[in-house]
Image (cartoon, rainbow, N blue to C red; front, side, top):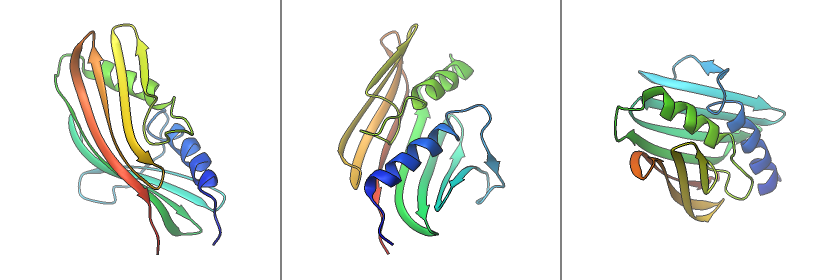
Amino acid sequence: MAILEQEIIEFLLTAKKHTYATENRPVQPSSRLGSKDLAFAQGDFKYWDSYIGNSGFSGTEVVWYQDVPVWSMNYLGRMLTGTYGGEIRTFLMEALALVDGATPYRGPAIYQNGNFIYKNSVIGGFGWFSGKEEIFYENTPIYELVYHGGTVKK
């Protein structure tokens, strides 16, 4: 199974844009009690994002190549206020749709739309990384998420 990191990244970008970052997400039957599961497949690749919770949540994303896991990321996030409700989710989906090949984990380093500002910082590379994303309304933090992951091997 010779697969290049760039092939995984290209698939991951496509999968992310077809799951959480879209209104028409392909929801799967729950794989765990109370989980929300999103899946995408293309060629020899499969992607699964499974998370629990809502305003406080935790999840895992996995990429398989020929049914062998090759990459995974865990995340834990929370809303810091209930004031902006669906606006935060809509704005987060906009930011996550801008995921790029340099940092294919969450959204861009910075994104702004109106008074909402998204910031994402990451350390490490595709094989071993950790990061944090935040959303601010004007200068007030209203959402945060931490994540870590990397390549996995048999």
